[in-house]
Image (cartoon, rainbow, N blue to C red; front, side, top):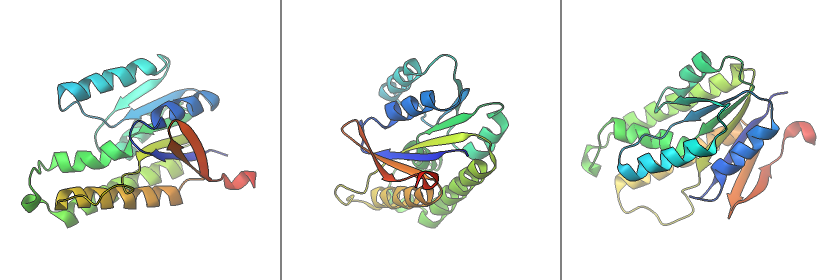
Length: 189
């Protein structure tokens, strides 16, 4: 049976590192799906550092949206797919619309597009004959954002994380580099 795993936690909690560790224990070959976009020099450096940590034998798909469709096209013989990360995938929809002020945000449109993206990813997971490891941030544990855009982002990511957690068999919460299994694999009960 194929494993469906969600790894969630705060920034720099070790999510990506743990996802890679799990992938090495699961079946190769691995397809790594990167959703980050180098919008500035600091982000370009982060992306480059992430690239260096991945085994050279892994295939990489760099995409900012429509990941379900693109995974289907690229999965090939991959037995394990890592999606890193949902946090940036959701953010990409805000960037795609070029919103820089709260007044310009079309909340229903962005929510509709994000939900369609996640439905496409879930459909891809359900059809693919591969393990899936999905990485996402938990952003709902801090302060309430001071503006509409921040609240919309936090709320959408929280909704996406809940939906993904319902469609996977395992959920790990990363805290200070330590993985805590919070949703057990149903086949191991």
